Image 1 (tube, rainbow, N blue to C red):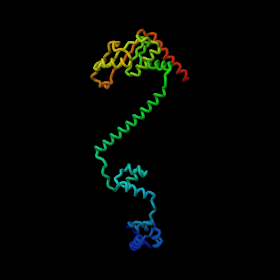
Image 2 (cartoon, one colour):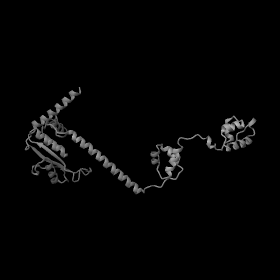
Image 3 (cartoon, rainbow, N blue to C red):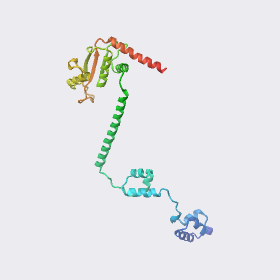
Image 4 (cartoon, rainbow, N blue to C red):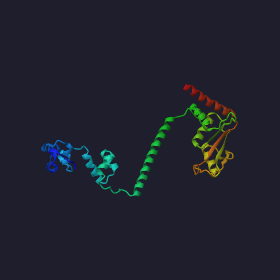
Length: 286
């Protein structure tokens, strides 16, 4: 206990009087004036352990929120639910209700996993619907292609996916390889636009040796609108036991290789067209 001197020497007697006043509803200011004690440290020691009267407490703007938070917790709400409903911070919610018993889980672990799976399924379905809407809107934006637009598309498509001669290995043959049916159909439409005789292209399937070659021939014949009999001997890719193949199943048809007989002139025109596109693009950037 702190030692006091002078007029505060009889500390215990003062404390008894201060406590009696505190319990009688006096504020610190009133006790100070009544006992003529103007030293705050002494005054606080005199009433130490005695709670202030209710009327001296300042109203707290969060008292209502705290009461509501406790009520919701007793109803079995989670911290997240209370936070969302009251618009207050998680730390405040924790401070207000941490002494209350934790609510019993509403669902068993298996039910929770099932609900999560259902929610994920709904989200994926909503996402897929949004993606399909985007694709449909973009599809409509294309409209009808002009011959020039198809021509430009075909040049870029060939230069991206077709074979190209190298300065050190000039082969000058138009050979196109792809596994996308849509790409194949656009390429064939482009050849038709260029008046390439339908008898000049030759077709070959490039496919893994373990795949169904006959089924692949039927698939690509339907895509290219040709007879199965026109296919030349397929090129079979050997299996590498060190790799894990993902291109398996009924959707795997390999690639279709389209060559054009006597295509040196066609190839050189394609190369010139592409260089023309590049040159005009570069000029526009200057």
